[in-house]
Every structure is written in structure tokens, then in C-alpha cells.
Amino acid sequence: MEKVTLNAALEQVTAITNVRIFDGDQIIAPRHVVIKGDSIISVGGDIPADATIIDGENATLMPGLIDAHVHTSISGLRDALKFGVTTELEMNGDFTKRGREIQLKNVNDVADVRSAGTAITAPGGHPDELLPDGDEIPEFVLKELEKLSEEDREAMLAAYAHDHEEIPQVTTVEEAIRHVHTQVENGADYIKIMIEEGTVMGAPGLPVLSDEILRTAVAEAHKFDKLVIAHVLTAQSSQEAINYGVDGLGHLFIDRPEYTSELVKSIAGSGAFVTPCLVLNSSIIGNPASELANDPRVHSKLSPDWIDILNSSFNTFPQGTMENSFKNVMDLHRAGVDILVGTDVAPVPVPNLGGLAHGASVHHEMQLLVKAGFTPIEALQSATSKPARCFGLHDRGRITEGARSDLILVNGDPTTNISDTLSIISVWFNGSQQLA
Image 1 (cartoon, rainbow, N blue to C red):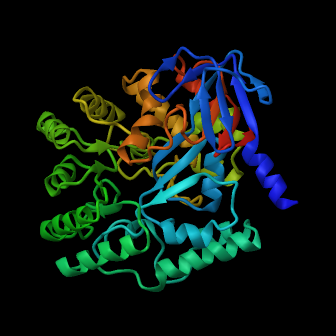
Image 2: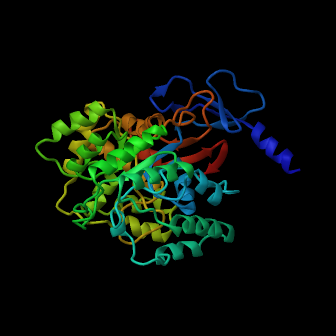
Image 3: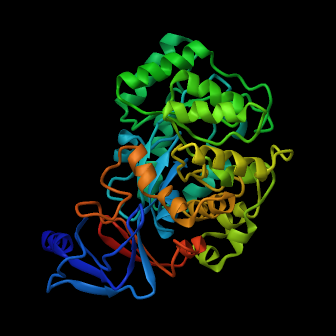
């Protein structure tokens, strides 16, 4: 009986008709998409006689959104999906291939996830300044565990125990090479390095690994054909990362020194992408995301704990300005650098990491990109086709024949009014429809 049900689901044909289609790059002429099981089988063309018809009048169909910078959890992946974020890219955490096998076995109601595994950082370096002291499981994690089913709780504890059995120390070139090998063996999809001396995080003087160690780590990761993404928050650390040969910057430098134009040229010339996480920069300078939290399209989908988090902020660098971040991201964009949507949201609601929430902050990030000077279509590209291309996820980020049926249907037209991305009617994840 179970097989029949599964087969029936795989064979189900759905046609979303009479709809405006943003295909990941642009609005296209066809007005309908046909999906069968987990794949898009046609864009335009004939509609099969046995198709279930969904009328998309006055609505827009888009590829599922991709958050290119998160730290996540089972509940975070669930929240992401509520907001049409069908893929999260973890930049330090437990969701490598091995971690996914432990935590997501028989879990189907969550977004897809890829991970760097444990990032390369100095002992006592970032992100230690953000975490509680001691070896005990932090109270905010225990609080989150209480909300999970027994199966989810056991999976999360297993992954947490594995991650904390022996936190890898990197103090030498040899240890950096060994660390890269360990992450690759665990099934890391890419590698993350930390270049953070702490000023922007309100903790100046954090230890940072030497140029030689970081350069070696990047070279070793490239031997395995792994992308390397660098945590950077200043112009200086951004230039250092580019000098090491990284493939992407996981943040946007928050300062704007006199040599910014030279830095922009350097980043553009390297071919590296940038995930600016404007939502994080906004929080770092002290801005809570209260307007987002108060939006009924957001408020209705998040727990009170996450709403409280949105209504707070990091506030570790109040001397910063969003004007600088907007200018920096537009300079990079005009120079031809691929700009990706990312949020840096925490895996669970943590009081001192405010202004960010899974799923919801992706929409906020697109709004901030438009405020900086992006067109709505450019902001949508940064949340769909661009991250898919940059991370080699060739089965998603586009509405095209053969792609995964990860889709989001929204009221209105976000290609002219970016806020319409939050007016979600329905989400399809791998062919499974989730009503808003």
C-alpha cells in the first residue's frame, strides 16, 4: 500500500497556469509550467489531460529561493521552507553529507541543505566570542531541543555530540591540511575559513590564523575541487581573502576606506562572488528588523521567540552606516561581481544574535538590495539562479525543463515590487506542495 501511495505521488502531474513566470533570470513568455513528481517536465507546451490545474491569475511563479549563508537546524530548515526558501547553504555547522544522514533521516518537511562543516579558525577565534563558555550544551540549544520530537531531538544531539567530541585545533600548516581532509571525509560541500580580528563584532583582538596557514588551507581545499568561502567583515580582511585565492566572500566589508575602488577591482578581477548579508550589517550597526517582524506575512509564520529575535540586533559596531554598505555592494555589482542573497541567521533563536530569522530574512535581504540600488529582478536573480550557478547546484535556481520542482507562487509581481515575495500562496519542494 505504501509503495502505491509513493508511486502515485511520483506520478502526479500538476500544471500551474495563467501565471507570470520569473525563470531565475527574467520574466519569460510562457504562462504555464508542468511538474511531475520532483521535476519540471515542461515550460509552456501542451498541458497533459491528467494534470491537476492550479490557476495562477495575478500571481508570479519563481524558483525556490536559496539562502547562501546560514547556520541552521532542523527547525531552521522548517522555517525556511515556510518562506519559499527551498535550499539553505550552511557556512559552519553540522549538515555535511554525514550530518544530513544522521539528522535528516526520514525528515521530509524541511528545506534542502548543503554545508561547509566546521570552519577553519584559530583556537579561541571567531565565532567563540559569540558562544557561551564551557562544555555544557548552551541553554538556548536546550530550549530548542524541548520543542522537537523525540526522533528530531536524538538526531540533533547525535550531530552535536559528533561536532563537539573533538573540536579540531588549527595552529599549524599540517593541522590546516588535516582539517580540510576531515571536512571532505565528512562530506563537506565546500570549505569555510575565518578571517576575523573582532573589532566589528565588539571583540577586538580575536586570534586569527597566519597568512601561510590560511593560504595552505585554500590550496588544499582546491585540490579536492572544493569552493572556499571566507568570513570577512572589513576591507582589509576582504583583500587578504582574495590574496589567498578564495572563491567567495561570505560577507560585505562594513567599512569604506579610501582604497575601496582598488579593493572592488581586486575582487572583480579574482572572479570571487560576494554574499553581502546586508541584513547582518544592518543588525551589527544596531538596527532591529522590526518592520519585518511586524509584517503579518512574517509574524504569522514565526514563533514568538524568533519574532523577539527580529525585534533586536547585534549592535556591536554602532559607528557603522548602511550608506557605506549600500555603496560597497553597488560598486561590486557594477563591477560585475556576482552578488548572492544570504543572511547569516543562527540555528536557533539566540538573544545576542538579533535581527535575523530563517526564511524571512531572505526576503528582507532582497528588499535591502533593492534599497541599495538593485532592480527587483536583479535581487531575485541573487536569490535564485546566481547562488545555484556559483555553488554548482545545476538542478535548481531556474524554472526550466528537467530542473527540480522547487517553486514558489506569490500574489502580485515581485519583479516590480520586491515586497510581493512575501505574499506566498504556495511552495513546492521537490514536487511536494506546501500551502502558505
